[in-house]
Image (cartoon, rainbow, N blue to C red; front, side, top):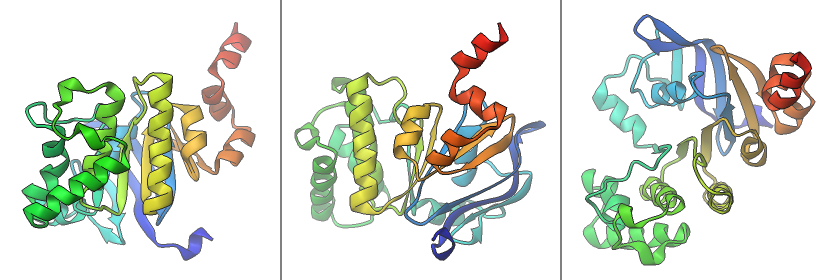
Amino acid sequence: MKENREAIIQLINATIGYGDLTVVNHVDMVVYQGETKVILGPSGVGKSTILKAILGLIKPTTGEIRIHRENIVPYQERELVRIRSQMAMVFQHGALFDSMTVGENVSYRLRELEMTTPDKIDQRVDEVLNFVGLRGARKLKPAQLSGGMRKRVAIARGLAPDPEVFLFDEPTVGLDPINHFNIEQLMLKLKKTQRATMLIVTHDVESALRLADSIVILHEGQFIFDGTPTALKENQDMRVKAFLDPEKFATARE
């Protein structure tokens, strides 16, 4: 039962925006330990804004954001660095350092925070590159990689410090069907073998249904659905149905 699992991430009556622009308005959300939760919605509705707030990059104007029951809203940068050390962010386009090799990209956080010895860093880089299926890519530069390979390197970089939480921003966007499938399989492998807690932002309905334990739909700054993939497919809210099958509803309006 979810109630018996620890709440890792909580949004409590959170209003988030930029200056006078409110993007997300008085929302509540919980991500439990070991859960894969998907924030689903069209582009531009504020899904990525929520990830930024969870990382402490922007602060809500109302409400709380709790990580392991700690309200991070009043925290200063030093305290936020400690919170972020528990999380890995995988950006939409990988966000690799072009001047560094794959190995240097993957080891960057370990070296920056002096988390272990150089020998153990090298060993860890080999481990995580093997995990994502890129054992032979260590000396390559990002420019030599395909889009799918860059995404796998980004996941390896996130995995290297052994975080508890993974945040994914549109993890399959722009990928061909084969690489789309491979990234989804890698995320499922993360969940199964690492018992990772994952929060995924996407507009891809089919991907959300395959990956999620639970899904929230963001619509005009509010969550209009929060439940399982099965419950989503059975939901009768017209806003939800229009998002899941826009072609059908566009035809009905003609």
